[in-house]
Length: 351
Image (cartoon, rainbow, N blue to C red; front, side, top):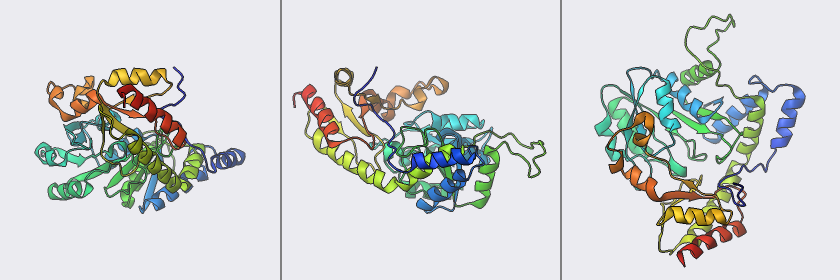
C-alpha cells in the first residue's frame, strides 16, 4: 500500500550527492575508500569519542562489539525485553545467551530489575535507548562496575545521545535519524577494542594478507559510497536533531487532551513519535485509509519464537506492545503534514 504520509523516509539535505559523486569519480567505492575513514573520524569526534569503526549495519555493529569484548558460548548478556530483535540476535550470533529484563514506563530497560538477573556467567549489559530515550546510564555503569561487567550501548535509535559505555553501536538504516541507506558504526575510547572490531569486520586478515585466518571473522565492511552519505548526514546532525525536536513539540501540542490517547515520556532525541491508543487497530485502519502509515511497538523478546518463555503475557513490555504504536516521524515532516495527521487522530476520537 502506498502512503501519502509514510512512517519514515530519509532526509538528504546536505552534500550527499557531491560526496557520492566524488567517491565514484575517484574509483574508491570499496571499504578501502577514503570516505570510510572520514566518516569514522567525524562521527567519533561529534560524540567526543576517540575511535569509530564503520560496518555494514547496526546489527553487525552489536555483533562486532560483543565479539571484541570476548563474548562467546557459555556467556550471558543482559538484554531488554522491549527492543527490536536484532539486539538479542547479536548475542545469539556469538553463541552466548541473552537474558531478558522487563521495561519501565519509559520503555527502556528497568534498571532496578537488572541486578537479580546477573549470574557468574554474565559478561555484558546491553541497554537500548528506545525511540531516542536515553537509559539511566549512570546506574547501569555503576552496576557494571560493581560486578566487573562490560557495557554495550545499543544506540541504533539515538544518534545525538552521547555514549558512555565501553562500546556504543549505531544503525544507519534508511529510517534512522541519520542514514547511509544501510550501515552501522561502533564507537569506543579503547584502542584495543577498536582494533579488534576493525579486524573482525574485515575477515581477520593477517598483516601480510596471506589468507591464513586465525579466528572466525566476518565481512561486515562499509563501502566508501555508503560512508560518503553518512559523512554528509553527520555534518547536518545538529540541524536534523533540532528539526526533530520541533516535530516532537508539534505532536505533543496537536495530540494533547485527547481521550483515548496516552502520550509517552519526552525523548532525549526524537527517532519515532510513540504513543498508546485505545482501539488501536481501528485507529490504525482509519489512518491508513487517510494515507497515514503507522507502526506497532516492538514485541517482547520472550514472546519471540526463538526465545519463547511462558511468562511473556505478564510483562510490562507485553502490555505496552498491545496498545502502542508510532506515527510518521522523519526530518522532512512539515507543520502542515503534522496538522493533517493530528487532525485525523482527533477526528477519530471525536476530539
